[in-house]
Length: 303
Image (cartoon, rainbow, N blue to C red; front, side, top):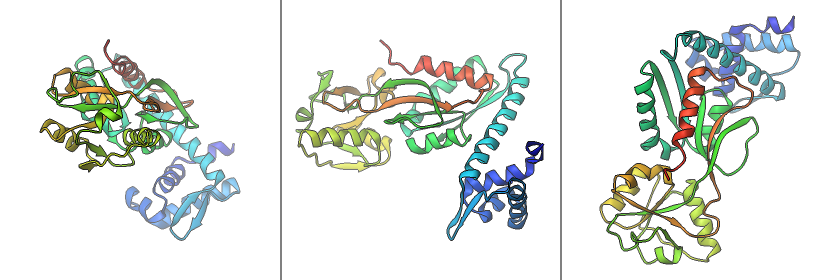
């Protein structure tokens, strides 16, 4: 059968070219020659009778047929990993590995704490956490490079299964002795009187904040802009003024009394959601399913 002739080596080389977008980079990552990879891709193309890549001056982009084959190859590799993981877990969750991709805010305290608590129950489990932009988190799940994605989303993505979804408000964060810290919610007009530090424009919290400001025809001139959340938080802690955040990003600091967080009471500030993402149609290894359930329990804010 044709499917039996799609050899493991050919598919592995083919997938690496898809990931890298070039024969040269794929050869470096696989530690083989570019000609060897080219031969394996040619074998697949001859076998299937269609080109798998569009060859372009700046690299190789999968054709429609290439995208279909890549999806097949990824699922096959993930299924093999699942079988191995489940065999190792027959005597309980003593061994296993969970690969997570997440937006930066979740990786500061929420995920490290969740991983540490999970390992108290299952000390043999290993984790790999990759921090990326929301779009890259979803891409990592789609390409099989992550078992679980934890990110903010504003639109649905084909091929992604939403395991958990909850609204994510935009919060104003401040020191507990700030003039606004007596309030549980604030308006943009109330915030405007104070110095503010903001994330860069590609941050989803910043995008919603800017939309809210535009609707109210208000302009904020931040005294500090940074792509590093710890910088913004420390600016607040040192008495520099306000900043903005999602709830989970600052949950532990609020609980410890280091920060006060007030929901920004403006239309559109709930225009994004927190999502736990997995690949549609994939059967997850038991260890991934178990950790996924654990995260579902941890995500909702305490009452």
